[in-house]
Length: 638
Image (tube, rainbow, N blue to C red; front, side, top):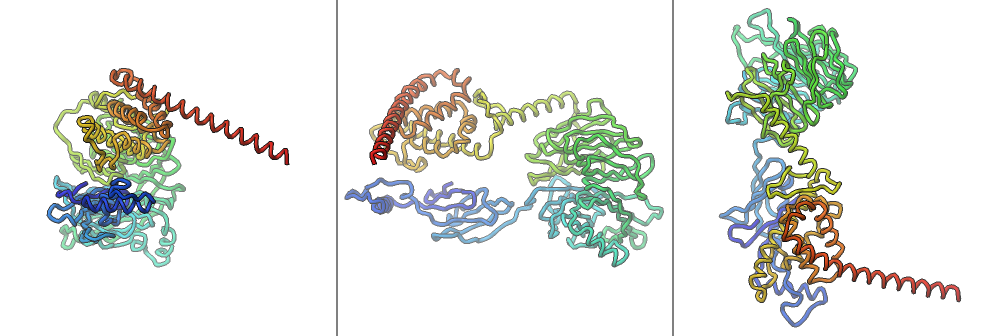
């Protein structure tokens, strides 16, 4: 990217931004002459060795941001200042005035999460959203502005978060701690593993048991109290220690009135020995009794009475562990790593229906309050809605959503808003509309979405191509890696720039000179071959597969020009590129009339150069045989 004046430019690398300035013509010639002398190529001509791109530019400074660069820009009023966006949602300003390292001037941290969001939850009044990530917990407003209220640096990796009141949240961390935090200050109000335990001996034992066992699941309920001015909160936790622990909090507002700032007093309840790691826990009410769902690593879901934790029924049927579960009235829903969504009867544990829900593991599910509508999220990046009362339960695919794995869901108490978050570090809000929803049309949308995913998996890109290129697989059509995609983009960019330069050359061949800095002062066909050499041999076929047919035609044109004006040293690479391109774009090449003449020219040139290679190899083999005979004769005579 160039600065506004054009006097300096910068290049983005994996770890830094390199800032360059242009040398004047005389200085570039002196630089070229000194380089030629160092290479023992000096002559009396000032242009000895020719001026190269490296002679025309000078490195001013290297900007190395703390977390790696993603993009950069020059300031218009002060081109010494470079703004760099980092990989952790921060913007840094550096001053590049002297040769060497640039000086950091200022840094701004963006409001968003710097890592994947693991858990989300809505406050009891529906006005705030808590989102937990590795760096802490952020509290956002639930309205359209999505303003950031608080950024709580917990000091540990938070895996799950729940609101216990408008002013307090409970978090579970990877070190086994279950802590209650004050939203306003971010301070730890109480550590439930310690402060909610009755005796010092039991606190010490609890610390030892929970020291390294990560907390993977939390749930909160607000049971009715017999006293009108008493607020009761129940919390259940589960994780790698194979135990589900109950906690009860009580809050009695002073004077009988409510106050969100009143601290809740906590007491530890019973502990359930699950025998396996607990992946999900959920409170629900069925047949006028409170119950608890637990999903464990052995792919079993169990139902217990609350608060006695008496075992009721076990649900068997998942082939792999169920990562999430929820219940509404007498229906239990579960989903997990086997990609299926299952509906069960809450009283007897009978399996009522099972459907393939997603193309990857289902990570979260929630019932909309007061309904049998269900929302699921998955590692395939999709969020879907289901109706467990229908024979075909699929209802809707939430379109234009996440671009990576979705790990968490939260729903407002009236069902008007659904929040989702995941590995793309974004928190998305889905609002209910008045538009009619036709299930059959949504099923067609889902089918088209799956076909698009199949195309992407097959061709390593976005399904069909806008230019009408027909892509034919050569049998190695697995998904393209990031390095393959990058190589194809660079090759396509080189072809476009070289085509413009070739048009200038054809307009006035006599006056043309190869002085384009974008082409490294090389002729267009030489620059294209330079970029082709940079493609890893293992990625060459897939990189050519990603090129549209007009870029393939340009590639053939420049390869023909290179073979016409150069020796046989690159004939192997040219032959491989032509062979791969014709194979993977076979149908498009057949239907492309202007390519036939170019292909005939390439065929004749490749045959000529390959014959020369064959003759060279034959001469070398004959010489080796003669040398071997001479050595054998010398050895026998001695």
